[in-house]
Length: 475
Image (cartoon, rainbow, N blue to C red):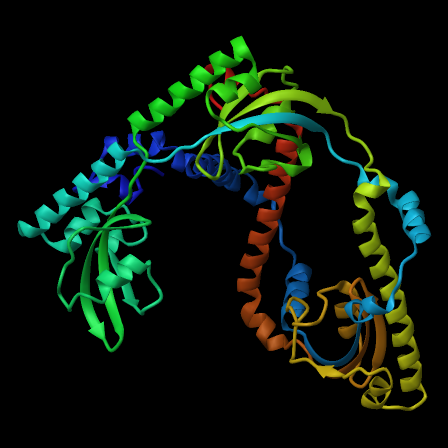
């Protein structure tokens, strides 16, 4: 993976220094975390594919069923009685809410939780890091002035991984599509001109206008990001270690005051995964805390957040699963009861409308009585999504079992619908014979992926792994 990444190369050769910088930069922690997980998932998959593919069979019946679901198409006219259209007609009494809570109380059980306090250490480039980025872009600019090709410099040095291998080409740009400073430079240059180094929110750039077409400019750029360097990160880690030592002597709160750090107190629930209140996503925190009990008053971390900052946590008491009390979830219950009552009213109106149609009225006539307007779809298959129609087995099930001219009624979680089948296109036998080989491959791939996903899911669920990385200060 790393050896195939062009951003790790200098002058066409793998650059260990660039690799080391990526590893040490906290801003890349989530990227590396995701890469590690992806490699862990993909490599076993590749190996397993060879092991179990031979055991998967696809029958002719499965191919035919898949083909029919793709090829059989219908066109319907429907009258919608949507739950949203009836919400303002519903009032809910407190007693109804209490009754609902009593019946559905088990649905409001929380997962295991833990009380935590946290402090954060901001990770941002120092003045030295900024000066290093400026020195690097100046060196590249001097190489260009010395006669080196712009595209070659972009391929060798630009840190924009999306464009560097194309010579930094960003394509044609209009006003309003770029960072303001970059736009200002772009439209101040003529075709063929190259800018001096300039800074934007992304870092330092050198920009070249390669073409001009009306109000558009085609541009290429070389980007050097202002990254947090090794020395800066080492300094932050030293502050973290000093803070941890201070906690041992003075306690968490006092140590935070002495370090001018704000503390935050909250409860993290297992069901929230790595989404930490007041902070946001923090990679690996949930698994670490809930994989086994941590000692109360232990300081754990540093963990890296999506904000690229370091976060330390003081372990409090674990909270056992409990059922939320009525007041905590009253608003949620009120919304559910209101929707249920609105759904019932919608169904009653739809049934009365359906009776009018049975008595001889047309869809338009019956719909107008209830201030509704029939709508007609385009042709759709069992796998297609139709705008404004619920993707539900009830609606599709009725539509695909009707004959032309049939009218039926079906209820879904989003409302009740009266449906008339306008036209039906049957699957062609000749097309099936031509497509059967392709369908076989598609079904085989789907079954293989489904089986593998299930196997991996069960493997993870039943795995017994102790995460002891904290013993060497890794989180």
